[in-house]
Length: 359
Image 1 (cartoon, helix red, strand yellow):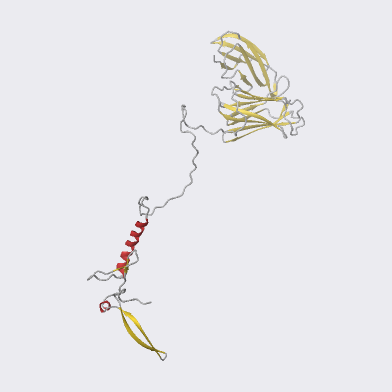
Image 2: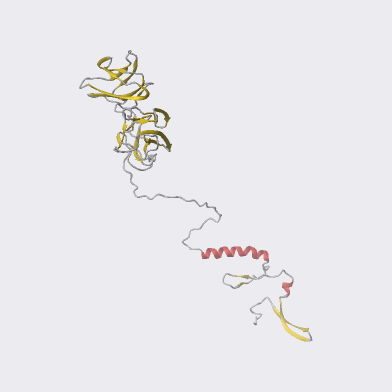
């Protein structure tokens, strides 16, 4: 390829000859003007369009150091020319971004209905299932031919605020039963008692002090018909639900705090428990009185008062129970007569307790 001296004005050609291996080789070689030999080697500069930039007259030629200073400026200009005009300039300072994962709940409506508070309430302690009841009947099942004839172990667990009471049933021989007996489960709110009535005729549990969570104590009294029921005394307002299980036969009761705050409490003494009227009972035309006793106590004197005046009295005969709690129940017809408390005394006149009423 021929390169003319006009295209490369800073070079000239000189003819040379050399003998190589007995042959004479003739050619041309390029040489720079004399002024070049008195200076450092030249490095031509090229524009972005690909043409070489001429040196100015009388200006020293660029050295390698000068080229190093110019090349970055050319790169910056080239990048600026390639940048999208719609893209705003960014800071050249490098930044570090930490990747995070955020879950955003879908928003369906940004308008809140007027309420007293917009704070979300806590999740229910007990798992989702049948509705929880705050007063009255929880469960009623009839199984006259069931093999569960004895109340066995009564156990309870607590997990995340959900209290589970499990009553196991046994056969008359003490083996695990497969079918629970006839059951009725009620929450007596004014008395603060959760009652389980059964057709079982015996029990391995007489009473049990719990003092854990919402249950304070367990009593298993005997009725006048010879059947057994279970009373769970409650320490706070609760809601509950119940279900019967088979093979082995069990009754499971789930209890969690909640419901109305007007829950009462039973009257508890060493040998007398009065369930009704409870501490939150209201005075009405009929005064129902029920509970159970333990030991040799054979009678209780009941006095209904209006202020300090006794308006009605009744002697309640009891069955002695040396090894079990024995239930009692009676009623006093009050009609429209005003009264505001009930007093219980032993046969010798020693006070047992007094129960006030609300109207």
